Image 1 (cartoon, rainbow, N blue to C red):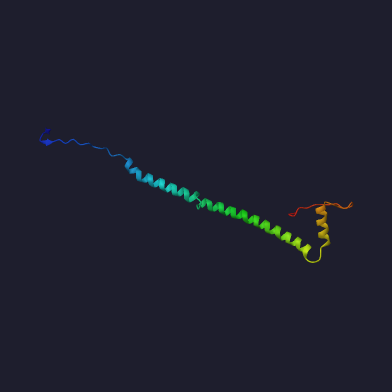
Image 2 (tube, rainbow, N blue to C red; image 1 turned 60 degrees about the vertical axis):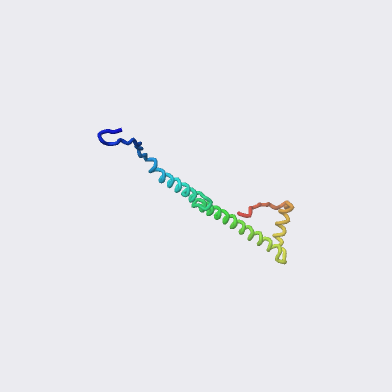
Length: 114
């Protein structure tokens, strides 16, 4: 087809879309969000460090309580095993084990922590 001396070419003109410009930033954002989430909440993340420190503090408290109880028990055993038997200690343990008391005695039991 001729039109005023020029050949007319039929071509398709595509409208440029903005979606192509958003693909790379979207993928980058998702990538950073994924690794950011796992850096905070993962097994070796920031939040797990705080949980580990809390568990260490709780375990240290239990250890301190057990060490104190062990010292008390070792002291009580030393009173019985030092070669001469403490009469009061023996009497206390026998009465507690047998659940006995004399007629004129008043028994007040106090816990080990008090």
